[in-house]
Amino acid sequence: MAINITGHDIVKAAALLGAGIAMGLGAIGPGVGEGFAAGKACESIGRKPEEAGLITRTMLVGQAVSESTGIYSLVVALLLIFVV
Amino acid sequence: MLDIQTLVGLSKDLSAGLCIGLGAIGAALGEGYTAGFANKAISQRPEKGGDIAKSMLVGQAMAESAAIFALVIAVLLLFMDVSSAHPLKAFALIGAGLSMGFGAFGSAVGGGYPAAEACLGISRQPTVTGELITNMLIGSAVCQTPAIFAMVISLILMFIGFENEPLNPTWAALIAAGLSTGLSSIGSGIGGGMPAGESCAGIARNPESAGQITTAMLVGQAVAQTPCIFGLLVSFILIFKEPSATNSIVPAIALLSAGICMGLGGIGPGIGNGYAAQGAVKWIARRVEASGTLTRIMLVGQAVSQSTAIYAMVVSLVLIFVL
Amino acid sequence: MENFTEILQLKINLAGIILSFNVKTIIMTWIVMVALILFALLARKKMGLVPNPFQIVAELLITAIYNLCIDTLEDERLGKKYFPLICALFMFLLLSNWLGVIPKLCEPTRDLNTPLGMGILGFVIAQYAGIKEKGLKQYIKDYLDPIFFMAPLNIIGEIAKVVSISFRLFGNIMGGAIIIIVVSYLVYGILLPPLLNLFFGLFVGTVQAFVFTMLTLVYIAVQVK
Image (tube, rainbow over all chains, first blue to last red; front, side):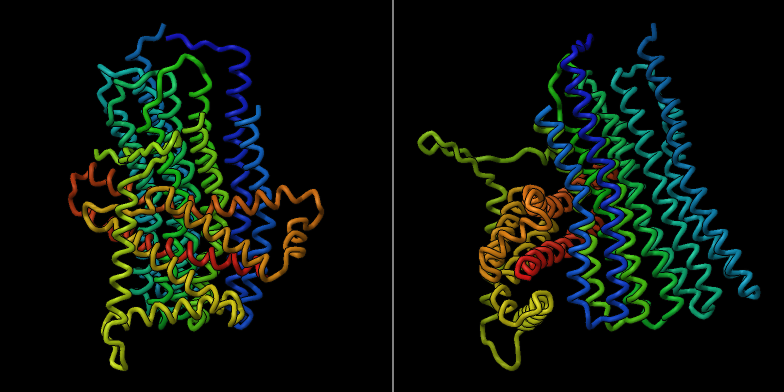
């Protein structure tokens, strides 16, 4: 069975592969980083349980910021899939 | 010109090599880590050398089971009968090898942490040797879950026939299915090992609250398996969705990309979930009365750090279903 | 192997607009609703100082979730206001995730539509809470943080929360269901499936129901602060 490969196909295929790699690799950093933040937040709550509310809020804000690169990857991946 | 049987035979042998070659890395790392800590523990308390060596061997045997799964799959692959195989079998076997090879890595490394901490714990608190070994066995057994998922996908890829499916997009789907579960298992395996190790250290520090520590460890480990479950879900969809035949390269690359995306995307969140659970378990051991709050914050933190794995799953599903 | 990807759909043509219903999901959701109403009626029956078993369960659950709301929102008034929603959400999701343990029934959360609906519900309520507590001006200002051109990314980040919360529940429940089906097929139903059912149905189901509820509560808490 013959596979026809045209120039346009190569561009599209490369864009799709790029989308997968972008989101895949882009997910590693934020995943580890947010987990690290959560681990440290748990340790701080263990040290000072009465400040749990403040620590949780700080953790969530920190995680939201470190997730932004993951969201950029998502945006880039969706752009590569639907726009290119 | 290569005929189909030679091609399938070639891919069978290649895949067996990949499977055990990749699968052995993790076990070597995990067991070496355990042995190092066991030596440290014996130097701290030489009179308990026998107990420590015993627990080291038990822990290493658990950590090794992932590599043994890889060996089983590799042997099955080597002795598989491919005399009348369909060309798709070649790609299915490569997928099976990649899935089990990568899948064994994380679980074996993860299994090393609890074994190492149990050895150290025995040297610190020899009176709770029994509890420590029990907790270590539970922890490392849960660590093997991602390897078991990878083995399930490998077995499906090896033994289900693909005769009725079109060659072109399906070849990519089969390789992608292996990559998705295999790579995403790495993170979950390592992530499952971190809280297990910390819980062994915690029980040695505070033996009275062993029950709460083990419970927190199990909750943390169960949530850390989520990225791997997503990987399995994507693999399963890739295997059982019947794509329509085409002679363009684009759908095939889309499916391959879906597998790579979910596979790589599962690594980070798995390890991150491990960190979160490790922090919580560490402090539950030191301050049992805060265990409710700590478990709650651990769950929220883990859930938020999984979100990038979920984005990866969404991109994979878009690549599979929308295109 | 059971063909679980097949969805029983009922299509109704309403003046050119085709409405499709996933019959199985709707029936399962109704079963959960009936069970919850029955539970509420049984717990209210003969309420007194010497409680019946249902009343004990209800009291434990309600006290725990009420304290959780007040702890997370850090405000007695807000806690009281959002407590009924959070409690109902938790009970619904818990029972939905447990339903798959019973043979012939399946979890309504296995269908993406249910978690997505619950996720959108939580999103809308969090936005409403934000506008109500902070005022419209401050609410819009928070989206322009730190600089005005970050607004699109902030909005995408907010919408991504709906995606992540609903796909997390869907992925876990669907993944569990698939693992149970595949493993039962591989070992011909010997020994493992009941254990897996207990693990994925009861344990993971409970953890995920709690995570979903807790995240909805946290999204509200982040908006009102």
